[in-house]
Amino acid sequence: MKHFFTILGGMGTIATESYVRLINHRVKISKDQDYLNYILVNDAQIPDRTAYIKDHTKENFFFALKDDVEKQSLLKPDFFVMPCNTAHYFYHDLAALTDIPFLNMMDIAVHHFMEKFPKEEKIGLIATEGSIFDKLYENSIVKNGKKVELGGNEIQPLVNELIYSDIKENGYVDGELYHRILRKMHDDYGCNVILLGCTELSLAQEKAPNHPYNVIDPQSILADVTIELALKIRNGMDVDRAVSKYLYQD
Image (cartoon, rainbow, N blue to C red; front, top):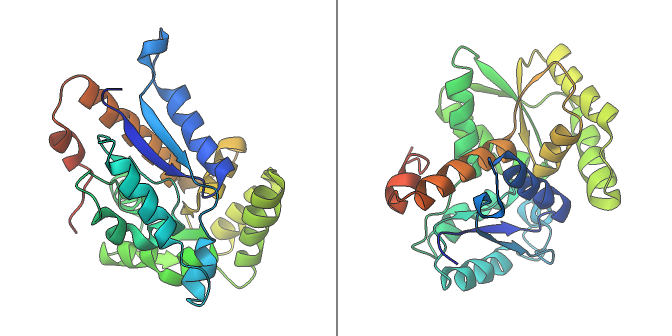
């Protein structure tokens, strides 16, 4: 297979399915051969990311991802994508394992926010407890001169319910709960833009998009970037030149 990319998925599987569905449905097609070439590594056995980030006595999820990156690198994909925000805790360690370009979904999302909403002074962040705890999104946003709003103590339990109880455990998106979280972040905490820092939240956005709030959806943005790069490379652009736009150094 020529000109393919590798998706490091399974974190969780339903969220990865959402990412794959986005790239399959957004690419313009008139025949089978118009779809993108990719290998999906749906490694559902990767240990819980938040558990390890908050407590290093728990099983380290790095080694499962390390194995996936090293094995896939032997196949020489054009680039890697990893549609899981929390797993980016080890992004730099994973990217260092390979000479294959490795897109950083978090960096891409923050730069998208900066470009689309340059006048907004802050952004609301809802995510797993692991992503909140490691402050990767927060640090990146603050470094770019913006403020982060996490909301009050009532927000995280609602987010956890949507991510874990509904989606991860039961495969169900509670659209009303998702909208209630967005409404509280907007009305109670003054967030005109809200970043969805978990791919389960991206799935909620895919399934329940009928709300009036501005969201930054990293998985959706990554899907668009993936299509853009894959088509440029298929049409003859050098891989390094194609991906350089999205390999931020700041």
